[in-house]
Length: 542
Image (cartoon, rainbow, N blue to C red; front, side, top):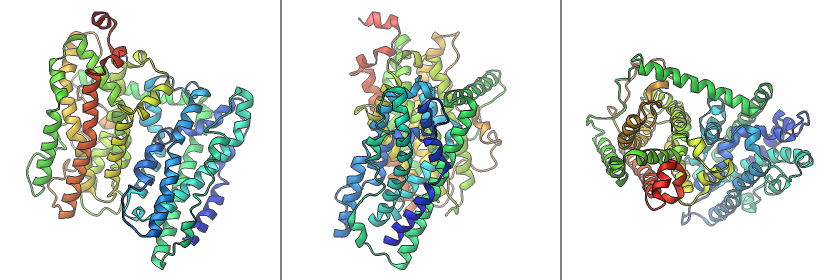
């Protein structure tokens, strides 16, 4: 262990010379807060840091192990307990330093773009996905190895926040505000050392030593990759006049493309694909296929379906807006889930990688269509919250936000547990599909009524289930793929069958919470969402 820690120290000292830290501490920008622009590629990771610590780094209670393991687990859990508070420090600086205006994220849709959707920021999300994959694997179940993960994260944090703290004095001089996340308050909690003396007692065998050193090297490579990307991003943002104009330009270009594709679709020039990812025929994977249909039926039969069938007029619009608000994080985050988490890492253990690659790339574009519907439903103008308040609600609200974030991270955990198995990745995609297919099936009654009641309005495309408009951007053969679009024909081992069934159960358990919450928002908590009602409906209700 000590040799691995010493190697980590050496690599951290090497990383300390990275150009990113010099850029943060520089004084070449007139607006000192702009030196924190490099955190935009980390935006989603920073806000999700409580869940990163709780769901991945911390050990769950009542796990058996040796006395030495128990001490290491306790040290890791205590560290994770403190680190989970750091997102609120960021939120405090985001609010007080008015980073929403600086970063161009004053509107809910621009927040979603920066947090989850922007293709420009995909390289940073890829690193985040790989970091989670490292922690949820079998190796990291060993306390000694997970300790190395935490120690590496702590050293990275110390380097980054040493740089931001050096800039904090200039920020305070310009704004009169003392940063807490970007300043000394946070740095004092990023000492660069977990500080568990128990690690000194861990002795590795020769094989364990090699594994530990490889782990440290992999984590260091990810840190360099992330720093390189953050540095490239701020350089590009400087040339564009700031991150706000840069991201806005990208989003406008993607929105223009959505409108062009929609026009082609309405003109009959963009027919829907005839292929289907669903496993409709029973093969030797019959048990898995039956489980998929059972879960799908459970979601179709959720009480929310009856509420949607009965809604008319302004009530139908209210339901659509509630669904858009509550499901926005899940829909947006599916971009990264498909593109990064569902990627098969090579070397693949089984056949089927081309199929998974085709599905994940095509489906990853769907979230961009959601912003079209968000605009049609006038969601930005209707939300009464500031960007900081919306972040607080989406990530930390005990009823609506936190449960959804926990669900999203359980989806990621389950999907990344078997990085090299295409069959597992396929069923992860299909585990989202049994929920989304039921969701869009229920919504169709509302979208059809919306179209009838608003004949001059642009159509709803994402909520209608018209998802293929951007497939061609990621897969040229999206109309007639050259590979199968289902892997249900492949043989399956007992271990794979057991893992997939457990994964589907997990997705269903966590996924149902948001269906329950939508029903709650439309009924018992209705008054809390009255801002989504049309004014005429509000007057009638009063």
